[in-house]
Length: 178
Image (cartoon, rainbow, N blue to C red; front, side):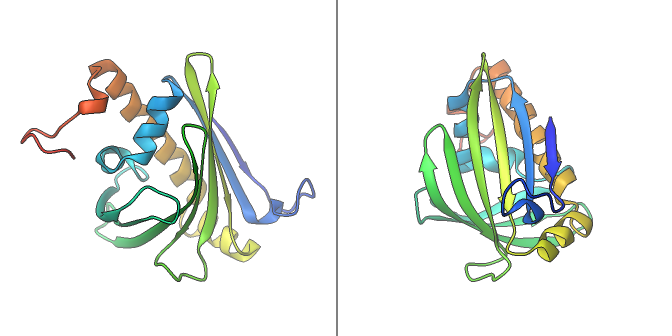
């Protein structure tokens, strides 16, 4: 896994406002993309260690939203809102992520899904509106560790799907899609 937390280098104009996290996952790009873009999968892996996710609404299309709550291990609920800005299956997703639709502190993320042999390298580049908001996300909310753990959870979930070989039609025990 590769993580870059830029702190002011001049390699590009957003360097002091961004976090870049990547991970190679041992699964085909189409499956990794599916796990990232279908609500039945997201609730199974989204978030850092110890967190769970409840989706209130989900529409995966450009301009669509994902309105959800992340439940922290300490019982704290975090209201979350994602608007999908660009979708190029199975290569790229761009999104705006904040606490609500009009969050002035929302950040932009671009995810690239790159084939690497039989696996997929996912690169998540997140750009915050200001350096201060980026620093707060890193220091107060542990954004780097959380991002690494989230991609780790995705990798573990996709590995489970490939082991079970039922990932595309997986259902909960009561027969309903999760």
